[in-house]
Image (tube, rainbow, N blue to C red; front, side, top):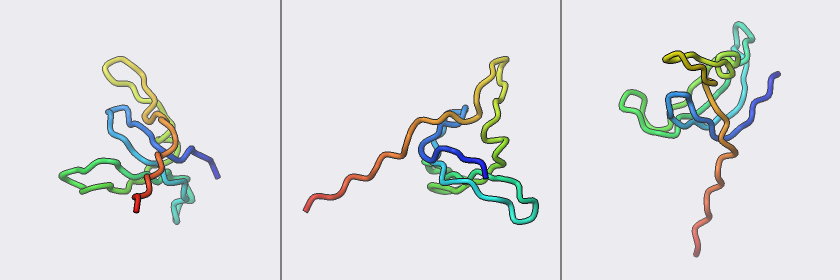
Length: 85
């Protein structure tokens, strides 16, 4: 199975996501990236979970004559600070 860095990623349109991992589609066995939106959407709510074919997650897109990676890795997800007693 393909590997992908877990952590924070930025979509070329600007939104942030957390990659959770890679799974396989139960019927086609196609590799899919599982990721969570790190924002609230009027249509999908807060922290909606998404799935996208692996090849699409890694591909580049062209917009206004410029080519960009669809997603750019930003680094590991920051760890939550523990509350002080």
